[in-house]
Length: 81
Image (cartoon, rainbow, N blue to C red; front, side, top):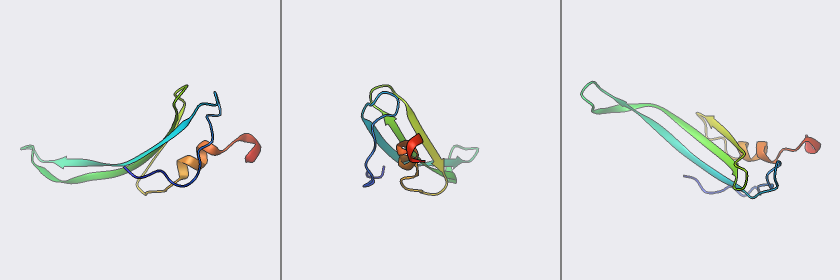
């Protein structure tokens, strides 16, 4: 799991609760017919910002580590484009 980027999270746009950030890299193993690890099938990077109060969340999954893209989406408000 990566550390929290420097960009500050705005409060939840629905309830004003505290937002938290998580990210990780999932590696899906490729297993042969005998159950032995052969290689990896794919790697998915994901980021998530969620509200600790109401549970609202936004998740981004990609093959690239696009840091802070989910934070930018979370922080976007109608009045700031």
